[in-house]
Length: 162
Image 1: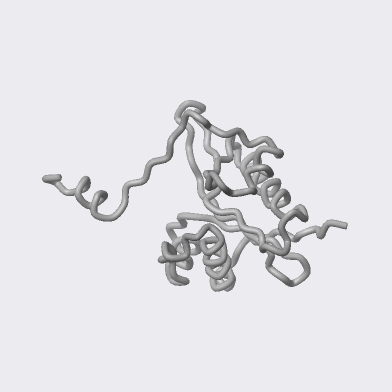
Image 2: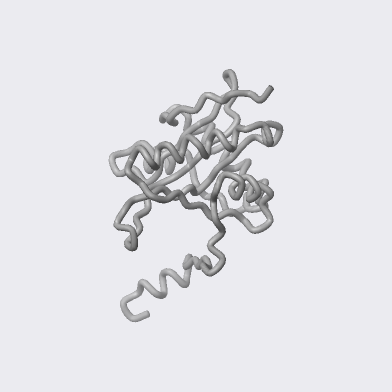
């Protein structure tokens, strides 16, 4: 029998747990060296007056087993809002037990409840969870390519004389 997770909104007291799971996800993705977020950052940006993200936590019993970390997006083509799923994480020993599907269902319901028309995510190409995303109806946007501008290149472009 699959465990039925309880999913709830993250609270300020959950920030240490959130950061721990973020680091665990980053280690799995071989990107731990890129994690610069601090508890203060998460408190400010998730629970302060100018929220930048939302987080839902999944529990089996009293144990946190996963989370979704997301924020609003807007489609100019559709003239509607949606949500961008920055992270979805399920503890390794709880994978393939329906937790990920429950977290996705939860986030889809929030998207629809808010009048949104899309839920987007950008997994790594090698991530085996892509099978789950496709199984629940996500479609790979094969023509779209991701780009990122950071660090010195971002500062140079932003400079008045750049």
